[in-house]
Length: 387
Image 1 (cartoon, rainbow, N blue to C red):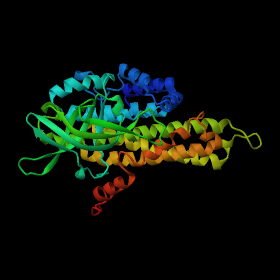
Image 2 (image 1 turned 120 degrees about the horizontal axis):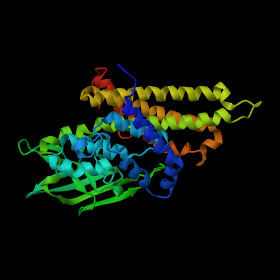
Image 3 (image 1 turned 60 degrees about the vertical axis):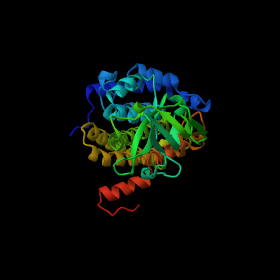
Image 4 (image 1 turned 135 degrees about the horizontal axis):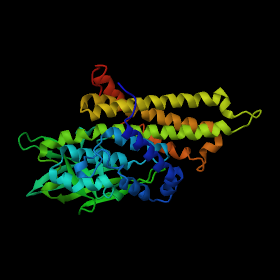
């Protein structure tokens, strides 16, 4: 057992940290409030190879794993730039295509994902289904050589920035007549695919959308994989990387908030010329939050290591635990930082309250803390399924 990064991983962390700090939280907030995207940061990260660290080298990537991508997610967030589309495009879409796509799909899509010139977003959530993907209402049916998709999706990140959306639909199994999941690579400009922007109380340069699929026709090769049998394993292939990288982003955000608060409380003097950080009522909550963030980081490292070793079942447990721990730790860290800074903590200038919405959402999405607790109770504690 080792807690040390390799030399290459250390170099990656240092390089991504330097890039993130060159842009900083001010850039992130400015873009978000202007309704713009962090295009410059994304483009540079792609050019430097950070977006494709988990993509095989034969498709233009770095040949690493989710461990390396988690480093990228965490360090950009720790610099005040938590980029949600890192989770969606490199973590989910690239992993799914790499593991379950056809060779033609890998050649067509992975190089662009690796260098940042292309983005693929992910559409699974639906208004009625919520956390229960077994109740998905989006259906795909064969029509000659084509597929025709109908349904609705909600809270779909970054559709306005992407060339394709990876849509989870249900198809009829000809042998049983039952519906089974399948994934489709749908161009975002496809006829019949429309979107409506959701107004969110989150300071983010990445937007959320409702998607409407009305007789969206795609060719046979839009189906991910060689056959419909690829659907279910492809769907699950993206879930562990999603949880691990979301957790990494949360841990990085927690680190950022604690660092901002620590700098302020170490120099702010009010009573008797002593720094406010010398008072335990200020320093202990920050120290507690720092402990929680560090514990979450350890679980993220464990989950990523298990996933990269191909131990998917164990990675599923660890990934869920990491996501839970990081979501709680990030929310605690940001709230504690705001409290430590007092009224200053609520200003845009000090860059802490701008993260309140995002870390609160991190306890809900992409899977709620309650569903994670259900998972742990059932699969770790051996309790009867409660839902």
